[in-house]
Length: 369
Image 1: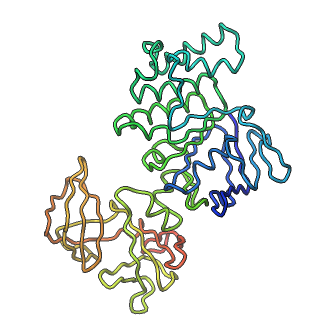
Image 2: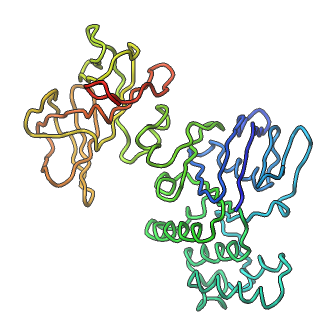
Image 3: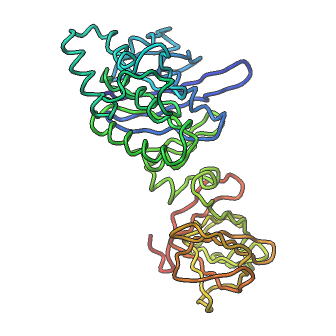
């Protein structure tokens, strides 16, 4: 296991800044996911850690060793950083069998023949590839090729795993299976893992912490549950969650500190001292839907019903405002039906309308956290 420290890292390509003064500490044994839209800098950051890209500024430490410093002009080459990497393309040798592809990673370690054979046999067994070891990559499915790439990495037992969207070429069912396997592998080895993806489901289900990036900058670093419940700005709030969060821009209503309105709906945020103009964020599952009138509720029309297995996603309309809600099977709704909607004050996130930054914590009507 090894810790990683990134200090004030910047990488430019001409006039474009791919990584903008990024700093983060990655704990030993952690499964850290770099998440963000295309072009946010996550893959560039991973390649800088691997030594495949040279940053313009900053420092990188791996297990306390300085592997890059712009000030000291120190650049440790990739082969000496004691890490393993899995690429999106798998990077398998087409003329080698499964066994020889995995063995290729071991050959560079100069192990004894018996140690190399034992380690090779074990990793093929662990990954269920023993019966396929004499096949060539062209004779394997996408999932099987992915397992070969992972076996080659795991066989070398590096203290640091770097993974660049390794599951993006697989179908949805196989991706789910491989998420489970990857999490097991990482837990069993204890290796520090940095994983790049644009898929928030992968990020939220596999990581110990998620780093959300945008335009080369870190927007938030949090455990998955905190990232979902308390996004630190409106970008993160809108990016995380499916179906998406409801973000409602509202202004203080009639000088009443707690009551805000966007002209269609009124929201009592439950606490004072917020700016006059805010954005209220509420997750679809935090809206209480009823066919009866609820205290503090308002009437909406059901404009769309989307059944989704154990849940149903509904679209609600009031004036020009559209909200999404997630409900179970305890209530049966149809398009055009009238319902009332009640906001859960404890689950509201309130953002400054100008900066998009998260304001004070949700406070209930008694003024406690």
